[in-house]
Image 1: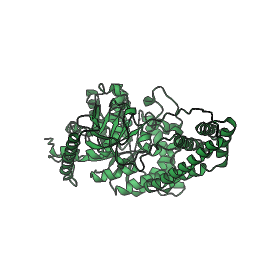
Image 2: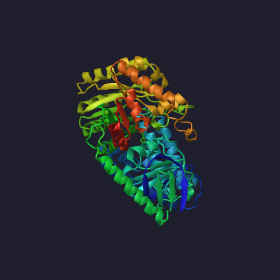
Image 3: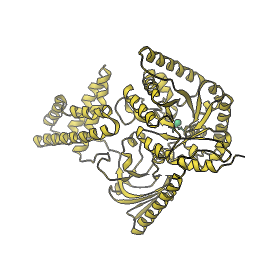
Image 4: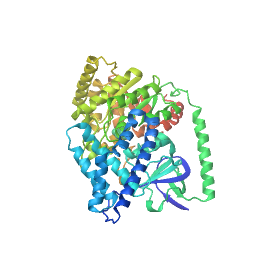
Length: 541
Ligand code: PEP
Ligand code: MG
């Protein structure tokens, strides 16, 4: 038995097998070979295995995200049958007498460069696909396990750290908990754990070479401990705690169907935050009044090309229909900083959190923005949609957005495509937006305060940097004063204000927020009933 202590970012307790996800070492070594036929046979076997994997992935994706989104796995299967691609691999093995891994890597370089230099956008995008199929082949040749959880049992995910695009590839229903060697309390792994109501630890000093997939472990988010190969008594204790947690959850469940209302009659909207369509189950299960933040950028992550208007339309429509008339606030694309997608070609930046991200990309590349707006406005016909724009710092940006919105409406009208213009709000998550919130309030329908970024920018603390966790004080007076100021300015112009950052779920602050006049709290689904309980015990008189 070995115990490791880390920082708990979400409470809860889990017992189960470990699944270690390692960052792939992508160094391909060139090795000389003697038996050409044997090497070619290795490639052919790897192709068969790759096709098998892709077939399974296709079937899984059809069920989860529909045929249109799953089609990419069929395209990859076809690419593996391409005669030019195969011929190149064979030629390199034969003429250079080298190992199959090296021949695939060299073919990948040649083909992806060829594609990326083409003028046609479709062929340009195929460059990433060539990389994808080649990486798959190399991993099979190297005997690495597929970095997907298909077929595995429910597990505790152990990793160095997970990027948002890595988390989207995980099968959520098979995750019991997260244990990260690095990662800050505000990382997206932490946010995902809160959405899923599972324990999560960061900063656990593990040597991943000495942790094995399949070993049993306990994650205790109350104590911040991770116990590998626990003794029988520890397992029994964990099981007992899990049962107690279940009991507490049952008590909370009795609040389902009740209003979020203080003893003296103030009603608060308690909404849920989600990152993907599949999270709606958690929203409904926890009886949220609506969705206060759908981080739409997750639709853009973990893939090789932009999601089309049609794909987005289907996703938004599905959310609206499943929420059956309850309000759904979708935030437009907040890509950049820690949420990177290669095909955006954002390049390396010195300060990505202060860089080319979110609304800045949308205003500079209006085609990307317009595709999303068209999908949103078309979907709005199917439910109660509001949209909000991230990272606003100036009135002029809002005016520019409205100009683009006007063009989108005109285009839809002209093409006689049914649409509805939703209510439009902004995220208040920069100190600049706070300071001019009186002017901004005149322009928009509502504000949603993003305390994660607002804290980062106000305290000048990178929210991803785990070494700064001890300095990151979300209760800092500056933040609380700012929230108060935003609420007052919004109310002056009859606009409502919510909080959708993680601070909104802090039960120690619920009463203070309500006293300030906050109208809505949008929190992880698992926090909805806990907030309801606190609200119902508050008396403002
Ligand atoms: C925030 O900044 O508080 C927020 C809700 O947005 P995100 O965490 O996605 O940056
Ligand atoms: Mg933010």
